[in-house]
Image (cartoon, rainbow, N blue to C red; front, side, top):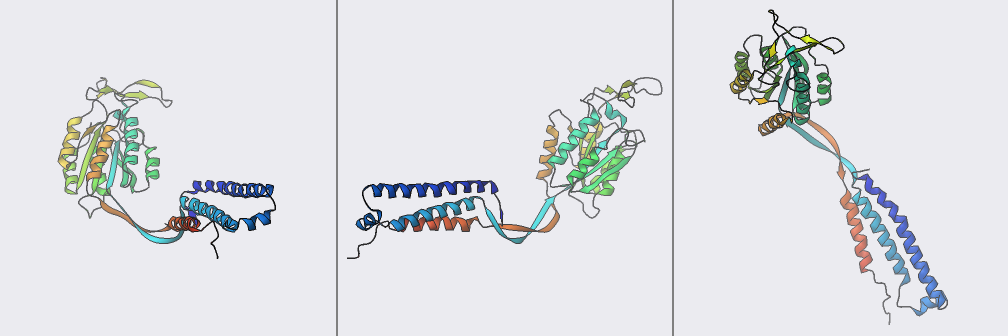
Length: 335
């Protein structure tokens, strides 16, 4: 037997106090009677009062109180097999970890902001299978679709601008890798969330987005950064600023949020585009969007669950109180 609310068992500490109360009460009555004469003689003289029933009624109240406390503790006895079904969607989150994500037009920097968004997404989207892709000049699957959110967060810690050696931003490669890692048989229940500044340097992401649409994938890009642009800081191994990225002509590179590309990707696949905000309102909107979509059955398992038995203890408590109530305190006249 286990208890659903074991903290209520502390109320059992009141039982000894209740017992002591009745003992003291009966002793005081006995002393009071003894003041007027012999106890046995007084019992015979007060033949209309049933002292034995009074003691029984006290015991019944104590037992009723005991069963009531046990009922409040919600005892669980016996187990049954319960089929548990989990419904959700397959959600892959692709995080841009190119050098431009070190720009600080959104604090503390774009990549840190993207990782904050990703943690919030994992927390908000629990119930769905989550996968993680990191990409820059190429794309790498960090975490395949899983219901293990702890593992997904662990892989998140590994994402950094030094993770993928190939420079650049290949949004199309990230989308293509997501297509490969979604279930092939289904043409729905698939969501790809892109966390990027949208500056694509490899191929045509819109063309790959059309392929994703054919596979039943809806893409929700979250734009990280600002359209005004920001230089890309360069730091040494100790994290000290040593300058800013420059192009071949020696001009400082200004990285800008490319909303146009991200909006086209969203429209092409039937998703929606959001710009990252300090309050992470966009994450909540995506969660609401996904929650409103049709879900598929992700997992069915049998689980042994204890059955609540508090009602039996409650019935015993009420039964004892009813008996206590109907028991007469006075003896019936026999003549």
